[in-house]
Image (cartoon, rainbow over all chains, first blue to last red; front, side, top):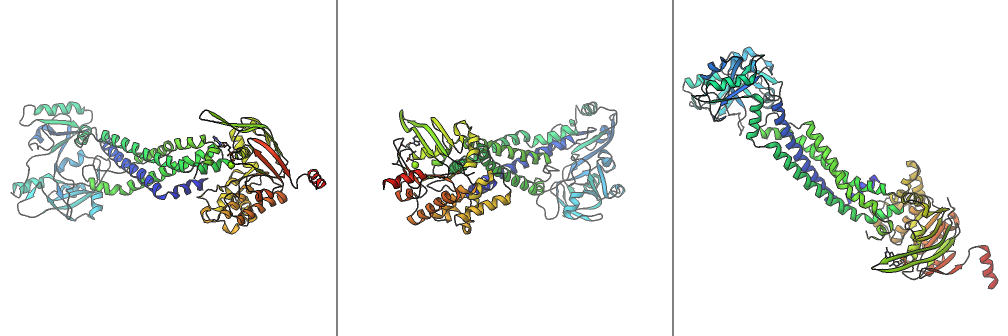
Amino acid sequence: MLRLVFRNQLKHGLRSLCTIGAVAVAMFLLCVLRSLVSTLDSAVQASASNRVIVQSAVSLFVSLPESYYSKIVAVEGVEKLTHWNWFGGKYPNEQQPLNQFGVRMETFLDVYDEIVFIDGSRQAFERGGNSCIIGKDLAAKYGYGIGDRIPIESELYTRTDGNVWEFDVAGIYESKTSNVDNMTLFFPYNYLDEARDAGLVQGPVGISIYIARVAPGYDPVTIMAAIDEIYENGPQRVQSSSEATFQAMFVSMVGNIPLLVNSIGLGVLAAVLMATLNTMLMAAREQIHDMGILKALGFRDGHLSMLMMGQSLLLAIVGGLLGVGAAMLAGPFIAYSLGTNFPGYEIHQSSVNLALGLSLALGIIAGILPAWRARSLAVVDALSARA
Amino acid sequence: MSDANISIQSVSKAYTRAGETLVVLDKLDLEVPAGEFYALMGPSGSGKTTLLNIIGGLDRPDSGLVEVASEELSQLSNSELAAWRADNVGFIFQGFNLIPVLTAYENVALPLGLQPLSKSERHEHAMYALELVGLADRASHRPAQLSGGQAQRVAIARALATDPGLIVADEPTGDLDRESADSVLELMSRLSAEMHKTILMVTHDPLAAESAGTIVRLDKGRLGSIDHKTAAPGAAAAGKGTA
Ligand SMILES: Nc1ncnc2c1ncn2[C@@H]1O[C@H](COP(=O)(O)OP(=O)(O)O)[C@@H](O)[C@H]1O
Ligand SMILES: [Mg+2]
C-alpha cells in the first residue's frame, strides 16, 4: 500500500515535484518571516526594565547636546548614565555599514551588565584612546583577535586627513541577552570627540541617545517624566522611553511587520493548499480505476482513504521538510543580509514547529476530499472507469 | 478453502435511467456445485457481467438470495463483503486490471497483504502463483512490458494467490489472440481439475466455452439452456444413453 503511495506520485514525477516545490517555498517563507517576527519580539522581551532611553523628541536622527549629560545624571534615581553614537562604518571590503557605536566608556559596561568579556579585559578597554571591544560573532567573522587593528571607513564621520579610522581590539564580548547583539564594535566616544577637537573630523555634533540605568527601588516611569520635564522648554526637547518601548518603536519604524507577516503567511498558505488539493483531485481521478481493482481485491474503504491521504501527506511533508530545511540552511545568510536592522536573526524552534505543523495540516486537509471520494466509490463504477 | 458452491435464488436487478427501467436480471436461479467449471454465454447486454459481479460480491441484487461459499451475501455489510471477497474470490477481467505502477510480482502479492501472512510467506505464495502461470521470470516487469496473454496470466496468478475457492472470470480471453487465449483457457481448466476451484467464466467465444464442463446461456435476464458436457456422472450417463 505504501509502495502504491510512492509509485503513484513518482509516476507523475514532475507534477509531484511542482507541488512539493510549492509547499517548500511556502514553508520556507513562513519559517523566515515568522522567525523575523520572533526575533524582533525577543529583542523587545529581553529589554532591560531598569534602563531608560533618552532621545530627541523630534526624531531618532536628531542629536542631543553633550551638555545634557550632567543634568540627566543628576536626576534622582539615575544610577549610571552612558550614551551611544552610531558610527556607520564599513569594514574592509564590505559594501554595507555595520554597527559601531561610540559610547561613554566609563559607564557603558555598568549600564550594560549583560556584556561579559570572553577575551581581553575591561581595564584594557578603559585605557581609552582608540581601544574598542567587539562582539564574538564579529571577531569570528573577520578573524579579529586581541591587539588587532581594525580599519574602518565611516561615511557619517569622515576624516579630513584622508586616512581611515583605526581601532585596536582590547576585548571580545558576549552578550547574555538578545537585545545587544554579538556583531557590534564599541569604542570610547572621547576618541571621536578628541579627533574633532583636533579638526580631523567632519560629521554631526552631539549625542544620538543617552541611556540611564535606574537605581534599585526607583520607578522608571517617574524618572522618564522627570527627564522629559527638564527640557520641556528647550533648548531641545527630549523623549524618554523604556528600553522595551524604544525597541518596539524601532520595530514599528520598519512597518507593522507582525500583521504583514501574518497576512502574507495566510495568503501563501491558502494558495499552496489549493495547489496541493488540485494535484490530489487529479491524482484521485486518475486512480479511480486502480481503486476499483483494489476494492475488488478486498481492500476496505479505509485502505483507499489511506492511499489518498498518504499521497497528500507525502507531498505536504516532503515539501514542508524541504522548505524548513532550506530556511535553516539559509538562516546565516539571511541574518547576514539583514545586517544590523534585525540583530540576532535566527530560525526559532517555534517557527520550525509551526511550519511543520502547518505542512501536516495542509496534507490532511488536501487529502480529506480525495479520501472521502475514494471511500464513496462503488466498485463496479470504479472498475468501469477507464484508466 | 476449495468448497465454494454457488446457489442463487430469484435474483433480480434493474437499472433506471432517464425514467426508463431496464430489467437486467429477472428472478434468476442458478446452482453451481463446488469445484465445477461453468461457462456463461449470452448476447451482449444480457446481464452476464451484472450476474458475475453479484456472485463475486462486487454488486448487490435488488432482491433474491445469493449464497456463495456457504455465505449469504446480503447479510454482509460492505466492509464484511470486502473481507469476504479477499478470502473467497479471485477475479479475472477482460482488461486484465493490473495496477500499472506495480510490477507483476507486486500485483500478485497485493491481495496477500490482506491475509495474516508473514513477509516471507507472502513472497512464497506470490512466487508460487507466478510459477504456476509460468511467469516467474517476468516477476519484475511492469504490466505495460507484458504481452496481453502474459498480463492475463499475471491476473490469474493474482486471483490464485490467496487460494480462493471461487474464480470469476469476465471474458478473460476477449482481448487475446487465439494462442494466448488457449494458454489462458488451459490454465483455467487445470485450476478446476487439479485444484478443485469453482469457476464461473463469462465468454462470447464458443471455443472458450468448450473448456468448461457446463455451459449456461443467459438471455433477457433469464437462464436459457444448460449444457452439461462432462459434469455430474448422472448427466454424463444420460448423455451416453441417448447417443
Ligand atoms: N451501472 C449501470 N447503469 C445503468 N445501466 C447499466 C449499468 N450497468 C449495466 N447496465 C445495463 O445493464 C445491461 C446488462 O449489462 P451487462 O451485465 O454488462 O451485460 P453483458 O455483460 O451481458 O454484456 C446492459 O444493457 C447495460 O447497459
Ligand atoms: Mg459484460
